[in-house]
Every structure is written in structure tokens, then in C-alpha cells.
Length: 302
Image (cartoon, rainbow, N blue to C red; front, side, top):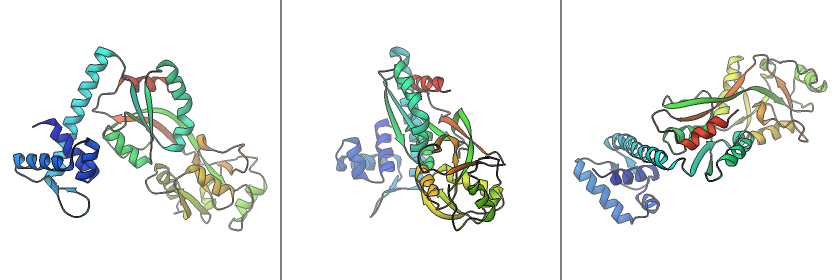
């Protein structure tokens, strides 16, 4: 079986369309359809359900895709490892990260990497956490920066740092605030004494949208404190969430790395008495070849 046909099937599976897959592969759509149909005849089974709407794999097609991914990845890994053994470090490195974490953590790290490896082209892939986990597991990025815990047993992780999580509250009194919260705000939060999240049971919360790992972290913190938060607003940006808090629209929890201390109108930040933290890691498939460029980036991390 030609490995090229496996790549054709994988492209159709990923694009859910013969037309889009053909464009990606730089072949004609009729030729791609004929090649996949020929493979199906050879196998004696159908790999895809054809009809109106997106192309979907059959049960046999899903199994073929799983094994084809393994074979194509092994071929690619072997090729890359042999090239690096003969020629040294490759000239490309793709890094998956969320926009906010990447914007805070990576610039200094990438500056140091570029200083020592100027010929390596760096590509940042910014997506939500769930998407990044999938991209890392499938080897579609060389390495990803992700928060623990990860819902994928096939990923190897290397810790980068652990930081505290802080409660962000408005810097001015709001109508929805209870007496305890008003006291914190009126006092300017100068004591910075740890507070209990239970004081904010009735407060409106600003949370990240579904698919962002930190949403799950915030909801779990509230659950551990015995309540479900009153979600007033959802956003795809931690910066937007903090801006909304600063304007009195609710409260949220953020990693220390992304706080807006000293940046004009900003929330008050309070430590929580439960001492929650977030750990960031480099993640990559445990059964895949880790490139020399990826190893060099890991070695530069603090």
C-alpha cells in the first residue's frame, strides 16, 4: 500500500471535503476521488460516507485513519531524525500556545533561542487549550505550552514554571457587592491578606469560553469552595476578562503572569486562602521523535 494514499485519506479526513483536501494536496479533485476509491476497492471496504454536507469516515475508515496516522508519523519522524543526524538541527520549529500565555512567557525565551539559532524559522500557533492539546497529540505542532492537567495520556510533559492564581475584583464599590467585599475594596486591598472564595458566592463572574483550559480551573476552584459561580460574561481573552472586572462587571481568577498591575485602570488582585497555583509545561507526543530545535528550546526555559 502506497503511503501517499494514506496521506490522501488523512487529508480528506481532516478537511472533511474532497475539494478542500485536493486543494491542500495540489492535485485535482477528480484524481483524488479516484485514488481514494481505488484504495477502497483494494481494501474491500468503504472509508468514507459520501453525500451532502461534510465527508465523514465509516467505522472502518476511522480505524484506517488511526493506523495511517501512526505510519505517516513514523515515516516523518524517521526522515527528520536521519536528516538531523547527517545535517544537524532542522530550520523550522512550530510552537503551540494560547495567545495570552504565549505573549507573556515566550518573547524572552524566543529572543534567547533566536540569538543562538538564528537560522531556525519559528512559527507560533495560537489556539484555545483544547485545540492545542489535539494539535500536540497529533504532532501538528512540534511542541506546545500548556497548563496542567492535560486530558491526553499520550503527551509527555516537561514543567516550565508554577505560579499562583489570584482573585481579580473591581477597584471601586459596585451595587452587587456584599459588605465583606465592600470592605476589601474600600480598604484598597492594601493588606493583601488571603481571602476565601466563599465570600464571592453571590458575585457575578467573568469566565473564559468553552475550550479554554483556564475556564475549567476557575469552575473547579468554585466547586472546591462549595458553589457554582454566577457566570455573567464569557470571553475568549484573559485581558478582556480583566478589563471587564476593572469596570465593575464582576470578578474572575487569573494567573499571576497575566495581571495588569500598574497598567492604568486595573482590578485589585487578592491571594486566595486555598493557595491555588497553575503549572505550565512543554508538551509533545511521547511516542514521537523530539527534534533538536525542540530540545534546544526546552533547555533554554527557566
